[in-house]
Image (cartoon, rainbow, N blue to C red; front, side, top):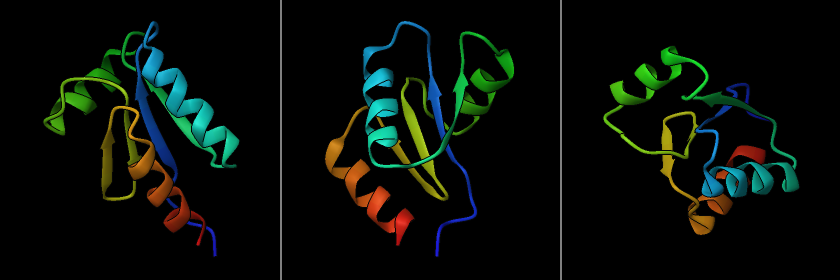
Length: 82
């Protein structure tokens, strides 16, 4: 059964790792909501409130993955799609 919680990716406009994360998710058939911290101050505040200070941050439910960590992303995707 697919997960009901949306995957959220916090990004910034000129972040290459952010582009890699988005491509990885798309290539693996994961729909996600992009929250660009450059375009909306509200998203930057949400991110800071998690205690994290850099992007990308990919949120799968309670799991937060910092940066483009393909091992962690692969694990999260497989659990998400299970």
